[in-house]
Amino acid sequence: MRTQVAIVGAGPAGMVLAHLLNAAGIACVVVERRTRDYVEGRVRAGVLEQGTVDVLARLGLDGRLRSEGLVHTGTNLAVDGESFRIDMAALTGAAVTVYGQQEVMRDLFDAAESRGLTLVYEAEDLRLYDIEGTTPSLTFRTPQGEQHLACDVIAGCDGFHGVSRRSIPADVLKTFERDYPFGWLGILTDVPPAVHELVYASHANGFALASMRSATRSRYYIQCGIAERVEDWPDARFWDELCLRLGPGIAAGLERGPSFEKSIAPLRSFVGEPMRWGRLFLAGDAAHIVPPTGAKGLNLAVSDVVMLSEALISFYATGSEAGLDGYSARALARVWKAERFSWWFTSLMHRFPEASGFDRRMQVAELAYLSGSRAAQTVLAENYVGLPLTSAAGPSSLELRA
Ligand code: RFL
Ligand code: PHB
Image 1 (cartoon, helix red, strand yellow):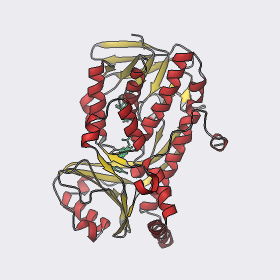
Image 2 (cartoon, protein in one colour):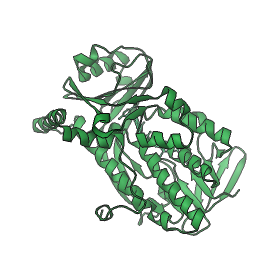
Image 3 (spheres, helix red, strand yellow):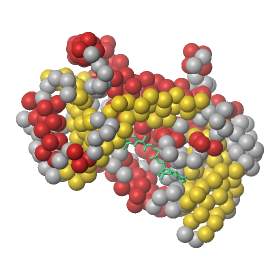
Image 4 (cartoon, helix red, strand yellow):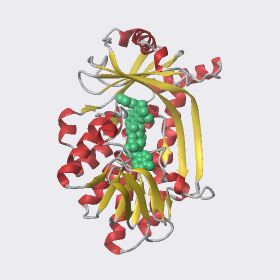
């Protein structure tokens, strides 16, 4: 097999890139380790930035998103049971859309089928060859046998545990990492959301989040210890702790229902630099991880592949590699800002095991300041709705110094 761009991984990064390239007439093949049902079944992100919605609209993938997505013009913060609203639309002119990653994946896969995109599922033991030359290739094994795929460029969109990032030599790849000493225990339940917008709660006991998937399906999270297990949290205990952290005002409107999904996710900040080695380009979780507090992971995957697609379109149109050469610095400039926001919001809202009484007072003071300061709220809101793409002319000199 031969193609122009081989895309490893059919998550949001790989599939949005495939659609962007297909729309530009560039041939690509997506190679995925799992089945479509497995990828589509993963319960993950829920909040789309305006820029992500715009990209899906540009690709003609926003039909269901427009009719079923919930546009939120504000978000709520709760501090030890008292809440206030941040009016993102008034502060920034932009909003976010609540539409689950599972729905985004379904739309991407359905359109891939109807548009004739080439996807290979259940590809095991994928290996990358000759990424430092101009004729890279992949091998993998499918139920049909051993496969070889020759290409011009490999897009490594295979998530945090994929093979792409590990194919960059250890003396080239610099990694920057922070693990947080807690996780998020999340549930899905078919009851109407407690509040029609999200509530991010900071409580002396720890963080909680009230989110949703639709007018009849709620998604709730509470901070838990990294050593805790799902079995430690029967529904009744989960609901009691969630209500305590959200506070009596919000708890009064909260309906309890049986959970049909319950899982624990660790929290991590991670960046690998550079995002390019030879003809291999990393995008999304393959290159970086953010803790979910800022709702940035899926959105960063989309902004990365928009920038990568622009570089590839220019490469195939002109033969110039300037865009490809600039991709890593351009993407990283935006990635680091989202990393900063996600780290800051995580640090502000969670209970750290080693935190002193002073540390808690600092969190509460900062939240009190946020509740009364338009300037502080604007900082939060403009990061939450999504920062603009870095200019194609390249990041500023300040960003390059990093
Ligand atoms: P993905 O989604 O991990 O997809 C990578 C794909 O690559 C495949 N793969 C391979 N394929 C072939 N060969 C190999 N050797 C392979 N190794 C791996 C995998 O099977 C998979 O299909 O990465 P991508 O595309 O970069 O997308 C990233 C997002 O999925 C992720 O950042 C978000 O889910 C993060 N996230 C959130 N992001 C948001 O923007 N808003 C949110 O509200 C939000 N909430 C969340 C989240 C993530 C969470 N968890 C569980 C990590 C909430 C949670 C709880
Ligand atoms: C979600 O609904 O899953 C969700 C929402 C906001 C976040 C993280 C996750 O910050």
